[in-house]
Structures are given as structure tokens and as C-alpha cells.
Length: 267
Ligand code: BTN
Image 1 (tube, rainbow, N blue to C red):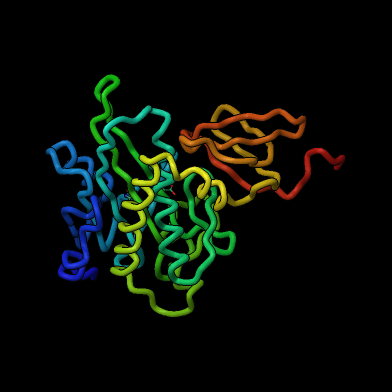
Image 2 (image 1 turned 180 degrees about the vertical axis):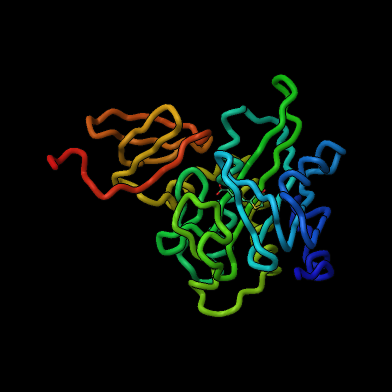
């Protein structure tokens, strides 16, 4: 079990973790955080669970988290102003906070756009940022982060969209989940500040995986082959297609996969 006393003694960090709601078992920490946000919980309120039974991933996928196997956490954010298209940037705040926390364990995580975290080319963490609007007014954002910490059997922790791994698979020894939660919360506080100050963008681009490699980016309507060349300040992906066209894709419904063929060469 995560230790509530340890968490309370180390949090908040800046604006994050001002309230801690720790559950032994929950359906989805994002759903609980949204409920709390609607009831008026402040920015920085944190929901955590040791087991998540109905966790949700991007694009309607499930995110299973067996008891004690990982981190399922959601933070309430109340940005003073946000364009609808900037939700991708909040997702990146979560991904970069997770990347920093894993670098603190001497690992070399990478960012798979829009906001998956990879270790050794496999997915170790995912982010689900969800916003609620009343007309053009933002009510709140919930930033949900899921990390596979312990090795899990096939089909375990992650949304089944990509080969998955765990932090302990890479570290080779037991990792303290409480310390990892603390590092991620501290990272969210830091990246959120950098985002507000307009300073986050260069570091995101630096961490982007598959830069200049051929990838396929698809949603239900289209599939595009291209090479990532960078990110927009709101978290969109800039790519160059095989015929040299430069496109920007907003995170929304897209998913990215590396491909091993070069579309500019004959088969
Ligand atoms: C993805 O990779 O598709 C995103 C996965 C996000 C999972 C986290 S776990 C904590 C929070 N609560 C949820 O129901 N989902 C997110």
C-alpha cells in the first residue's frame, strides 16, 4: 500500500498535491478527480489508488492496474486560461514529469507523441488529460498518469495499444512507488510553471522519440506516413511527409506507430 502519512508529509510541492485522496481500490482516479473538481476541489488536489479496476486510457482503451503494481494518479488543474487545443500541452506536462522522475532513477525514457513514455522502446507510462467546458469557459482539467512499476503479466498494466514494460524491469530492483509519486507530482508542478512561462517547448522537442524516423500516424479517418520534425507549443506534432509536405497534427484522436520501411524507396 502507498503510505498516506509519507505522502502527506512530503506534499504539497508548490501548487500540486495540496489535498491527497488515497483509495485502496477505485474504478478510475480520473473519474474520481472529475467528481471532486465538480464539487469544487482546488487546483493541485491529487487522487491516488493502489488498485484501479476501470481505468481508462486514450481512445477509449482500458488501463488495468492490478493492486500495488503501479501508479494510478490524477491531479486537478485549473489553468486561468486555456485554448481547447492546448489540452495536449497539459498531457505533455504529465509525460515530461514522468520522464524526469524516471531519469531520476538513471533510466533513459523517451516521449512517444502525444504523451506516452517509453523505456527501451516499450510503453511504461501513459497520460490521459481530460477537460470539462461550459461553452467556451474551462471548468477544470484532470491530468491522469498511469505508470507500470512492477513487472506485470502480459496484458497487465498498460492499455493494450503497444508493447509494454515496467520500471522495475529496467531498474532490476524494487522501486518505491511513494517516492516515484512524489517525483512525478514535483515534476508536474515544475512543468506546469514552465508551460505558463512559455518555456516548456524546447525541452519537449528534445525528448521526442522517433524524430526523423518514418512513422504512421492514424485515427479513424486517416493514416499519414511521415517523419516527426518537432512539436507545436500546444503539443501538436509537426511532421514531414514522403513528398515533402509539412503538416501539424493535434493530439486529439491520433496514435503514432514506428514503421520499418522507407516510403520514399521502392519495395
Ligand atoms: C493511455 O496510455 O492511453 C493513457 C493511460 C492513462 C491511465 C491513467 S491511470 C490514472 C488515470 N486514471 C484513469 O482512469 N486513467 C489514467
